[in-house]
Every structure is written in C-alpha cells, then in structure tokens.
Amino acid sequence: MTTKLIACLAVFALLFGVVSTSMMHNVYADMASDKKMADAKKIADAKKMADAKKIADAKKIADAKKIADAKKMADKKMVTTPAKVVTPASTKAAPTTGAVTVEIAKGSGADVKCADKCYIPNTVQVKVGSTVTWKNVDAMPHSVSSGKDATHDGIFDSGMLMKDGSFSYKFAKAGTFDYYCMVHPWMVGKVTAS
Picture 1 (cartoon, rainbow, N blue to C red):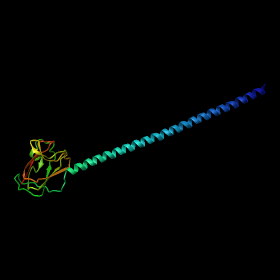
Picture 2: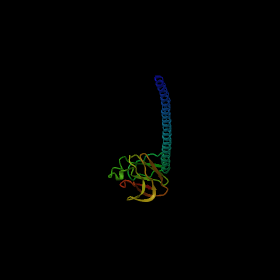
Picture 3: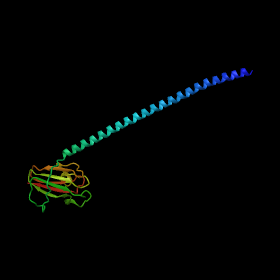
C-alpha cells in the first residue's frame, strides 16, 4: 500500500507542478501584458503632452505675431522723425520752420491742474509746411487730438500714445489749431501755423 500511496503522491505532485507552472505562466503573462499596457499608456501620455506643447507653442507664436503686427500697424500710424526741441521764450515767439517737438509732461495724466503745462511747450508757432512731433514722456497713455473743449474736429488725431510713443503732423495750411488729450481733457495746447 505504501507503494500505491507513494505513486499517488508522485502523481499529485506532478499534477500540482503542472497546474502551478501553468498558473505562474498566466501570472507572468498578465504582468507582461500590464507592463505593455502601462508602457503604451506612458507613450500615449507623452505624445499627448508633446502635442499639447506644440499647440501651446504654436498659439504663443501666433499671439506674439499678432502683437508684433499690431505694433507695426500702430508704428506706421505714428511718424517718428528726429526733431529738435524748441522752447519759446514766451507764448508769442516767432514762428519756426522745420520740425518742432512738444513733450507730453511727466505726471500730466494724474495732474488735473496742469492744464496749459501738460504739453511742453504749450503754444507753438510754426510756418506753414512745418512738422510738429508730440512725444509722450509720461508713464500714462495720452492722445493728441485736434479740437477745443474736448470736442474733436477731425483735423488730426494721434490715437493712443503709450510711454515713449510719438506722433507727427505736418501743418500744410495756415491757421490756429487747438488740441487736447482725449483721455485727460484738461490737457490742452495750441499750434499756430502762418
């Protein structure tokens, strides 16, 4: 009987070994499959992130191009020519020829009392054909808009002049041209062309 028992145990051990080997093979296969799936997910996630980065980079480039194009358009509207600063000894100075620069005074956007001291010089006399250039040295945006009492007459308008921006206008006809800042209407000035 012991021989039969030993034979049975041997068969049982053999079967156990076959079954356990098969089970282990399945476990290893599942682990390998899980690893492949994890690797595939990592690759897919990396591709998604790379694609998202490409899209974000392309958007940044497109946005930067839009901003640069808008700046170029704004710069085309503003004629920036080198000009000398002319500060008349009085408001009744003799007309000048050529180019005159008027500065938008620092702090003028915050000083409601600056009135006729916001543009320096405030009153300019030029000969017909002369060009006046306004330069914004203030930190706030300003405009140079022709008209009186904050009413635009349509003769010239700088649009928004940011810090260090400039605007030029050639006075082709004789006359007196009042101007002001649309953003800060207390800022006023005058050009007389004769």
